[in-house]
Image 1 (cartoon, helix red, strand yellow):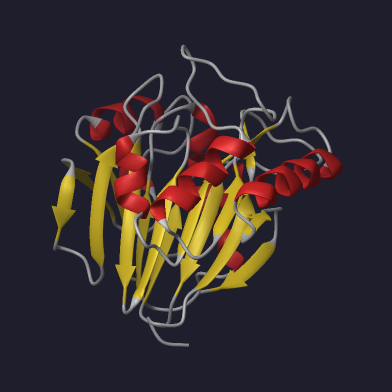
Image 2 (image 1 turned 135 degrees about the horizontal axis):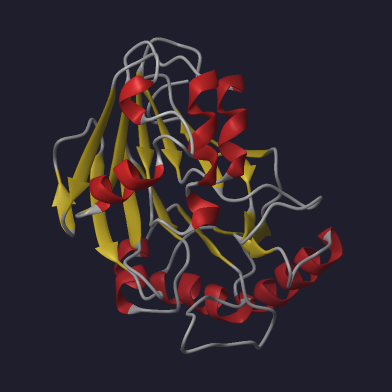
Length: 253
């Protein structure tokens, strides 16, 4: 598998809290050259099933709500021979230093490998072995969406957002858009922006992506696999190339 042959592992597909339906948010983009982890919910505890080789590993955090960082306390069970780079928005290092420390958990500097925190402003960045664009989405707090350009493939990751110009820009003509489906069909909230299946599908259609994957299903709104299947069917009526994600599902891009 080369960097142009990307495998995506869905390690946590719930939003808010873990349940029998899934762990909270965590994905892995796996290539021969490097590994990209997206968010660090409770699904992060599975990462050692896949990241075992001596290659660069990057962990991109969208934001700092608990369901996206709760898995960081499991980092001590991993070994990253080339260290771990954590990427976040400006101001994120202070947040991490306040939370990932005693008495809550092992501090990043005390882990058995090197950890570097990199704060990014919005825009394009050329410091990685892949193309990267990040933009602030619309949410109740600062929340970054990411556009990864790996070889000739484009992967857009926009979770915890309402429909917005930034998400559309990051997703334009992407091979795959991975986005959220926290709200039930037809449900909206101006005070706590998230997507319902119709909005996610409309965004995929407007951005002209090739494939849409729904995840970050609110654990309370989507307590069963059948509820996710219903969301998938509704989204497919608008954008047929839609798939609902489940924990431990893997796809190739």
